Amino acid sequence: GSLRARGMDIRLEDGSLDLTRRPRRSRGSDWSRRLVRENAITVNDLIWPIFLIEGQDRREPVATMPGVERLTVDQAVREAETAAEHGIPAIALFPYTDPDLRDPAGSEAINPDNLTCRALRALKREVPQIGLITDAALDPYTSHGHDGLMNGDRILNDATVAVLVRQALAQADAGADVIAPSDMMDGRVGAIRAALDDAERTDVQIMSYAAKYASAFYGPFRDAIGTRKALTGDKKTYQMDPANGDEALREAELDVAEGADMLMVKPGLPYLDVVWRLKERFRLPTFAYQVSGEYAMIQAAAKNGWIDGEAAMLESLLAFKRAGADGVLTYFAPTVARLLRNAR
Ligand code: PBG
Image (cartoon, rainbow, N blue to C red; front, side, top):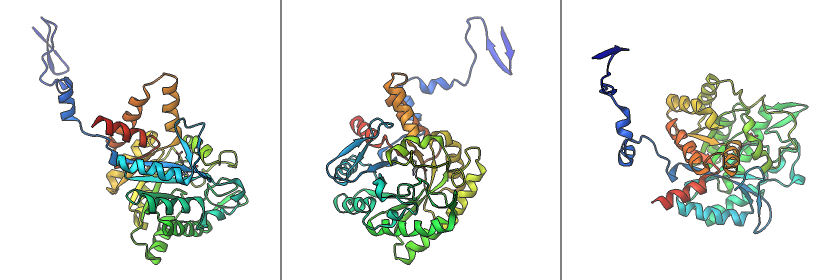
């Protein structure tokens, strides 16, 4: 006898179920799982963020990001060569600016010989096959650690955009292929696009941090570039409220209208819904930034033996792809590239 339950016949005599649909069938063996697999992470999905320091032939570990080091320009060139050999398409540069070069106006940001610009020139000359992405934002250069100019405790929007434009032009002159405005000022994408075009840099792309949230997950990054202690207050008047999703669509819509070639969501894993919504709506190349705090959490738990670090790393990157991301900025990039290479 069979029993009618929830519209299905369930056979009882031998304890087995009368099921037409058994989704586990396709998971029964490795070949079958590979055959039906919908997404994969490949080396072409990786953007590697690199931290720079002054000096020669030197590396400094970042205490809160185990496995990550700040690199002098020559070391960055060496790492970029290896990354390019492994097939990583692009790197993103972040400078640790000497404290005496930081001021309230972030003037060092527009110095054509600042650390980032010198690194760009060396990298473009020595490793021309790798894409070079730079942040347009003032925080590595300001004594107060904010991304913009300040008047009292207010962040000035339009005055900041004027400086970001000059910063972006200096970076483009030095060899940046992609400018990534990460400051969240209004109108910066359009202003940078117009200035690049005026300077006949129509080929330089813009990857906008379209939806960048005021997140607790940036802490280790601020150690890496030396802004954690300097930072007064928070960034909530320019970075987005983590409670908001629709606002990300409005932000991205403006950036698309202003000429963004690529969109980015940041942080990554806690904001996969935003990645999905931006990709669905705009169909532009869309990236996620697996930020320093996300990296640190995986590394810390792995070091304690609480999770399998390698498996967690690969699973997190795959999740970005499933959510619709075309690529991921991740500090795991060289590790993943090596793994993928050895798996071949
Ligand atoms: C600066 C910037 C930040 C990050 C990238 N660019 C920090 C911030 O906004 O305070 C964070 C990246 C990370 O945490 O890995 N505008």
